[in-house]
Every structure is written in C-alpha cells, then in structure tokens.
Length: 132
Image (cartoon, rainbow, N blue to C red; front, top):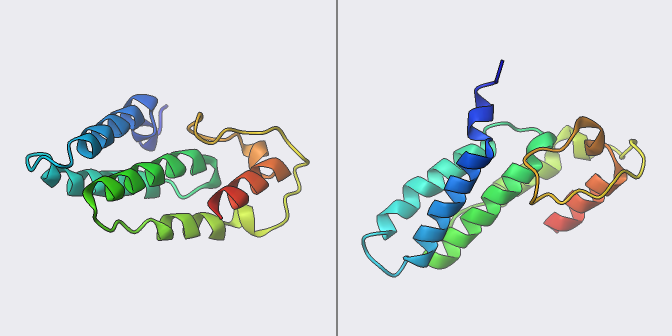
C-alpha cells in the first residue's frame, strides 16, 4: 500500500513544482504572476518539511533550491536556513558514519536515498560539505 506522503514525493509532483517555480521566476517582472510566489513558496516549504528524514534529503535540497530561485527572482526574503539546519541536526548526521565509504550519490537526481547509504561516509561528506 502506498503511503500518503509518497503522492507528494512523486517525480510528477516535484517536476510540477519546478515548472511553476520556473514560470514564477521567469515572469517575475509581470504583475500578474507575482501573487503566485507566496502560495508556491508555502507549498514548497510544506513539501520540504513533510517527512523529516535523512532518506529524503534530496527532496529537501531540491525544495531549498526552488525557494532560493523564487527569492532571487522576486527580490523577497524566503528563510531557508531552518530547513538546512534541521538537516544537520538530524540523528543520522550527528554520529560518526559507520556504514563504510559507500558510493557517491547525486542528491539532485534521486528522490530518496537507500537506508544503508545514509550511514556511509560518502553521503555524510556530500551532505555536510554541500551545505557549508
């Protein structure tokens, strides 16, 4: 049975958010599209906070990227630091990585990371160094 959050963490939904982000960013100078920035920002922030787990860091990072794009295009402040700091405070990143070296994971080409990869040194370094 499919969990309810998997309907939101579906590629189609994520690509739709990215499409609307591109529309709002591309047409930010037109007054008709500016009111769409706030609700889109709220939806993206909700998606980023939906499942607070290290397995879904890739989705959270995509959401942060979209929020930063909207902030730049509209000239408004959108706080994303709380999303990034929450990632660093999760229990998976607090301890030492004990899952071996692991394989490199491109966090922008996957929706979720397998359970064993979370505890690998490669994942740990990629997340921690990528956020700094």
